[in-house]
Length: 246
Ligand code: NAD
Image (cartoon, rainbow, N blue to C red; front, side, top):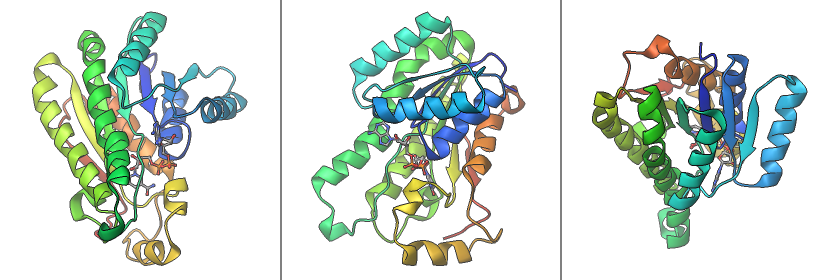
């Protein structure tokens, strides 16, 4: 579905991002996965190469919230591949901190990874996506609709991701660039493993489809939105959540 497209996936070392990278590679795209550290990037690359030596994948670890690093990173990728078709802004961190304990340091950390990086990467990719009439995809969350009972800046950051998605879709449509988001429900990754059991269990019980999401459920939606099958879809926040409404 995305044969020979060149895709950049942030937060591609594990969880949902890793599965997006895998899904794109299985569909014959060339993928550049971005992670936060050399060690985790290399580990992810090794795992992918063990699965299939022919996967065309490399890994880099620029600072996502530093405009200059990202500009240089994308420029290098463009000179290596001659084109860039897809950007997936997926890196993110969650929070479960109660408001009274929520420090400004944590506020800034969530903001940097979940919002600033989306802004910086989306801005830096435009010259390249203009050439290919490419696609920007963001990872939002189910909590961007309903909020959550703690960790206020996490849902707030995902409301911002939706705002960026809806606005850029309109701003970039005349350039032929599509912008959409996928809003996963609760999905089996390290992010969820780090949350307390008493928070997760009732959530899973309330999901009408009766199970937690698998990273592959989410990656399938990214594949669809990245492909020409979605050529007339832009400015959408696609919920992939088993109909959870919590
Ligand atoms: P995860 O913790 O397994 O993976 C997060 C990824 O983001 C990792 O690859 C990590 O390297 C990267 N990352 C984190 N901080 C970074 C930084 N400072 N710089 C660069 N990369 C950084 O989590 P996940 O569940 O796979 O989450 C991926 C995305 O999905 C996030 O945006 C998250 O908010 C969203 N999401 C997850 C769930 C869920 O239930 N797991 C639900 C809704 C939305």
